[in-house]
Image (cartoon, rainbow over all chains, first blue to last red; front, top):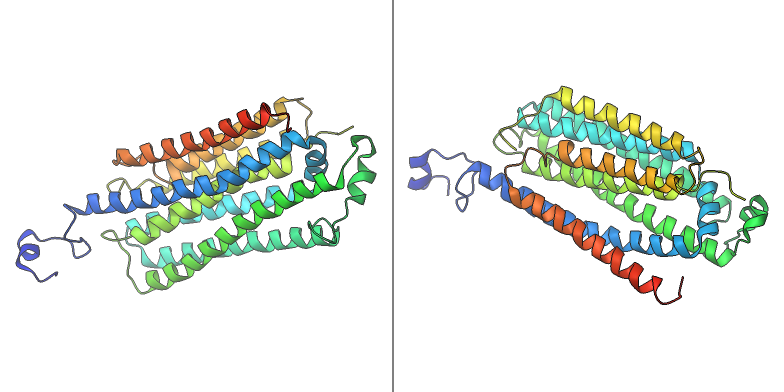
Length: 234
Length: 95
């Protein structure tokens, strides 16, 4: 299509598809499509946040005790790691906009490094919860929660609801992170081949939007799961 | 959004603000504020989410008005989900 007379006549950018008026409109359309996908993601995570809200009100003591059993410092450190990865993605999109190929590759690699660090720390936390028998199911045991908070009258079934939501939400978040790292592997390869530049960087921009969205989900998961019930309990 | 290449200084500033807010929210959670612990934690989280959306996700600079419409309507329907669920559970003595 790029050799058609119309294209030659107007001197269009080779990245411009013929059904768009200009590069700006093409970029806005791609970005809008990504935002529509993110809107569905808000509803996807929204269902779990809604379940969390309902059960937190219903089983407040178990949620408070469960929240205190998580390690605040590890969760905060992971939040810092994720914010750093958001910075490297934002700088990566900027590098693509300016056509700095080498910088883009380095920033995408750094993002993956931060993403994998986050997943590693998360795996450490899950392992610790597994060892404490806090994984819902046959091996579940709320003994240490009851010992630590004898006055709260903790019901192990209700504590399981907290850990079910904890594993569902952090697990779904981790799956999104893994998909994100997969996207960045592909993007790094394409960026290294010089596919992206000021004319065309839509995949970098959209993967960036996805990564920032996953970061925002964690920005809410961190206070809801780790922080809200930190003050001394009865 | 393509016309505006933001300065890297802005990105670093946003990053520092996000780091400071993370430390503040982790610290203030250990202080007993009564029912306000929840409110403060969620307010800080919303502030962080807002600056990530506006600056890292370039929503402040996009020329496409539909993007903002999509975000606001997605949040609106999420709030409908929460509000109607709470109205249901809150009036049925299930909680």
